[in-house]
Length: 131
Image 1: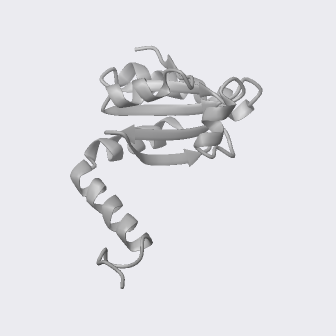
Image 2 (image 1 turned 180 degrees about the vertical axis):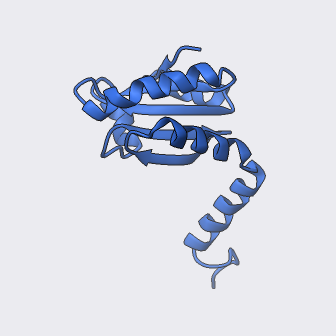
């Protein structure tokens, strides 16, 4: 499967319509991005059940800013509309395969519970009403 080019116009639709999306934030001038591209494309061919997408950070500066991308390439994995992984740097093939395997193995109900617990803690403690 070839990769999908994400733009601010199609980003929400692609991510919400698919359970598992890998996103490569890149730019044409970026040497490490060019090194990572064939690794990413190879993984896309091996994992045809997943959506592999790319965001050109030069053309889609608003998207890059929204996700606070500070270094490229950055790989992000979104499962069930939850970002479960984000890391800058060109991953070697074995590391990319490992990350995909770990993301596949996640129990998304547990992930959502962890997010709720973290949000409650950040909002002021145990979630009890404050006086």
